[in-house]
Length: 325
Image 1 (cartoon, rainbow, N blue to C red):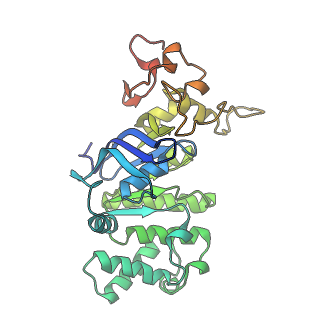
Image 2 (image 1 turned 180 degrees about the vertical axis):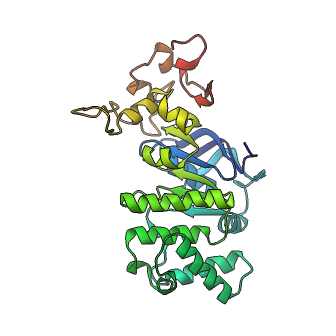
């Protein structure tokens, strides 16, 4: 594998509260190589979006990084001055948000917004930037791009707005894209087209993508590796085929069992009993143990580190050499 473009090392994110800090992300480590798509999955509240926001320097106040490091191309970026981070974010790191309406200014045409981003980060004149913006809209699947260039966000459907957001994220020719639930509100056919754009981006330009999603089908179709998060921590990370075909962590197994399939007939889908604990009420030991069907006495008192299990790493005591199979 190529040298990592993004390295997240022991990241910890806290939100101050009256009863002490709430830990939203705790000791999370992963990397992404150029041209790779890493999927980040888990239930709502697992810490996926907070991790992505920390990477691109857009944590909502009063959230802050209290430990760990984020390196981009070997350079630490989590401690950069705000102005320098803003330049890096527009030029080297792009972001795609779940709701395109929050990412687009309703008072400006979509073309003007893309041109403005291009000219802020690339040495382009307005005419050249306009043509490149039209080409970019066409490349992301917007039909009649030259005509739609001068339209406003409200004149686009949800799927078309999301394609505009992708074009906006790619306007500065970034080397890393953080995509937070980019296909959640889209129909299946539009979803497939958006994912095809991301895959083509990786193949043709070597762009690295951090794809945050709750959809395991999207992960299976798009990603090379997947990281599973629970209660702010990584519980499993490894190649998609290995993790989805034979999940090593009971939580990953629970997520996969809850996905409908065409094989066999089931009256009800299995579910993971209980709910994810709040950040300020995490149990001792493994955070998943109150809901785990395979918990042992050790699980309630000791937090497992990420242990090697084939090509992946798993935070589960089931995978220590002396533990049960």
